[in-house]
Length: 198
Image (cartoon, rainbow, N blue to C red):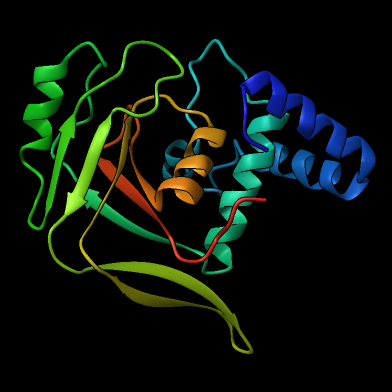
């Protein structure tokens, strides 16, 4: 489902009513999203980080579950970049670009925020040589990590607050997304390793 937040929320709620397993999964995910012992805060904030005045809802739980399942099934690869500073407010364009100018090789980025909520992205992040992304696979021995090499690429950059639906759509439509949440010194890059829109 692609469309406005309201259309997506309506779709998710109908799906939950039609298929109780969808509803059960969404509410289970929502119940553990705030538990950092189960889902590390860094992963949660990279996937969805809402303003304090907005509570997580079924739409966040639905798309978070899609992304988290993609990670656990090896269909989304992850790479992290340690930064020296946390990102600044969207209005601080020069300051954010100064922080991004210190990315380690082979990464580069530009903060170009669109105005207001609902903007497509906040710029881009790219790499000019192959980069290792970590994926997870299930095996007879349990869950194992497997590295994949990803050729040079560019993905949308999202700084600060974002919704799980936005993160998901970037992954499936743009091949990935680089997330730099507030109150965090790491950029997490999600790379599409075979997840498709449903």
